[in-house]
Every structure is written in C-alpha cells, then in structure tokens.
Image 1 (cartoon, helix red, strand yellow):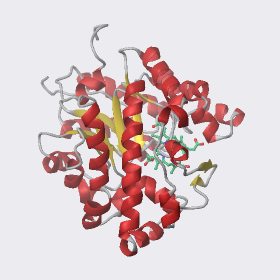
Image 2 (cartoon, rainbow, N blue to C red; image 1 turned 135 degrees about the vertical axis):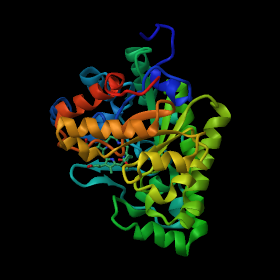
Image 3 (cartoon, rainbow, N blue to C red; image 1 turned 180 degrees about the vertical axis):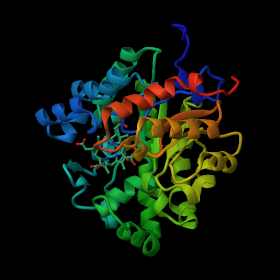
Image 4 (cartoon, rainbow, N blue to C red; image 1 turned 90 degrees about the vertical axis):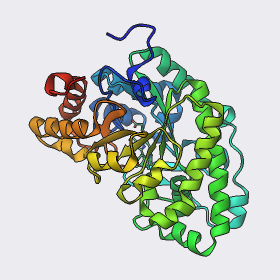
Length: 354
Ligand code: CP3
C-alpha cells in the first residue's frame, strides 16, 4: 500500500528511487479514443476552449484518471498553448491539426516574438495544475509538459504539420543566424513556462521535441540539442529536484544525443529495442516507453506480450511504462484499460525477483 504521506510512485521512479512496481501512464491518454472526450468535444468544438477553459481542461485531464487510474495524470493542453503569449497566435483545426497564420519566416517577425508572462498569458494553467494535484493527491503524479524549441519553431515556421520540414530546414541551412535567434527566444520562454508549471503543481515535466527526429544527427547537435539544454538548464537552476523527461518521435538515430540534453528520463519510441536503448543510454539514465501504440489494436495476449517484452528489457528500476508515442484515435477503450491493468499487475505476470 502507498502510505498517505509517501510521494507518488511515478515521481519516485522518475527520481531513480527503487520502487515497489513499474509505474504506467500513456502519452495522449486524454483524447479522441475516449467516448466521454468525443461527447464533450461535440459540445465544445474549439480545441482552444477545451484546453484554456480550466473547468473543461480539468474535466478532460481527469477522464482517463477516472476510467483507468494511471500512475501519471498529464494536464490537458497542447505544446502550442504558450505561443500566443509570445506573440505567435495559433489555432488547432479539426482534421488539419495546428495552424499558425501567418507563419514566422522573416527577421521582423522573429524580432516581434516577446517574453512570456505565464500568469497573464496562460492564467488557466495555475487552476488546472493545482486542481489536478488536489484531485489525485498522492495516488498519482501530475505531469506538466512543454514543446521543445526545435519542434515549436517547426510549427511556427511551417505554419502547420509538415511532411518534410522544407521551410524550417531551408531557414536552418540558408539563414542559420535568424533561426538561432528564434530558437533561443523560444528556449528562454519555454524555460519560464516549464518553471511556471512546476510552481503551479507539476511534479514531473515532459519536453516534447517530437520532430527533432527529422534532423540528421549533425543538424540535431546544432539546432535541437543546444536549445533542449537551454530549457533544461533554466529549469534545473530553479527546480533541481523536478524530474524532466525528453520525448522525440523517430529517435533511433539520436538516442545518445538525447542523453546529452540534461534530462533525467529518455522516452523511447518503438523503433528502438528497449534492451538496445538501455545499452546505448547507459546505467545512469532512466527510460520511459516504448510499446508501439498500434499494439493496442492487437489481441489482449499480444498487448500483454509486448508489455512484458518492454518491461523485461527495461528492468525493474528506472523505467516508466508508456507507449512509444501518443495513443492513436480509434484505439478500443477496453484495450487501453487492459494496458493499464496489465502494467499495474506485472508482478503476477513476471517471474523476476524484486
Ligand atoms: O497526453 C495528453 O493526454 C495531454 C494532451 C496533449 C495534447 N497535445 C492534446 C491534443 C499533449 C501531450 C499534446 C502534445 C503535442 N501537441 C505534441 C507532442 C506529442 C506528439 O504527439 O508528438 C504535438 C506534436 C502537438 C501538436 C498537435 N496538437 C498536433 C500535431 C495535433 C493534431 C494531431 C491529430 O492527430 O489531429 C494537435 C491537436 C491535439 N492536441 C489533439 C489533442 C487531444 C487532437 C485534437 C482534438 O482532440 O480535437
């Protein structure tokens, strides 16, 4: 049993402490695969309303908590949420995804990006995070999250989700000084925003550099890594004990470089075998992941086998069970329930000595 005064399991695991079982949560655990979410979305079709009206954002964040009791509860929001407060307005359009219009392509637009004041720009964050903390108490860990500079810049410069990132890479390779200015401004602001989330109650913060896996390792060193480090330095200077997680999609080629970011936990996608990820990251780094989200379209036996494969390769300590990317729309809810249930009852399934 978890003692009432004991810190929650996922937080202790994230700090690298020895824990009684592997904690489990899912990226995008609140969202379209849940009927309660789709019903609420019909009544409130604007993504920005759902994420910026604190009552709605709290209700949505708690939908998976009520249904599955995961060990982590992530606030319902988006990586783009703080951009408006820096002078980059955005919208999220059904079936198109994020839209930034006009996209940021000129020096004058980059000069106009300004410092974020979270209490003024994103006042709902305090209500959302503090309420989530009081709702879940010590039974779960409340996670905040931010986008990393490269990925936020990718949206800002492309103006939307992109297949080849030709605009931002074009800027990187022809006007590097200009892009570095944008990345550095984003890094300062994201550092401020992550600190703000911690002040408001986030116990762990995940950095999403989702599209940094699009960079060659050499370009990753130039355009992604230094700005991840800038964010991490800023947060660790103020909150050295708050664990930070870094997630990248398609990260197999840059896994070791992720370890250089300064985060405490690397979230591994499913393109790397977990045993190999452990070897490449070394014993000092905790890991999260890495079940293929599409595994949840398989049978229960298949899902259980994939979970067992991951946890056996990750080992008992320094691992947070998760998917290798967000849960996919259309995933059967009972399979999501089975993922959590199995994750929480691994000891009955594994003949691994504690
Ligand atoms: O994990 C959670 O439950 C918290 C919710 C969350 C959302 N976005 C809500 C959301 C999180 C952690 C994010 C992060 C995010 N947003 C990332 C990083 C994670 C990743 O997927 O790599 C990125 C790249 C974005 C940008 C973004 N926002 C995209 C690409 C989309 C469209 C995706 C799609 O499939 O349509 C969004 C919209 C969005 N953010 C949705 C949700 C639940 C779907 C739209 C909706 O529900 O109306």
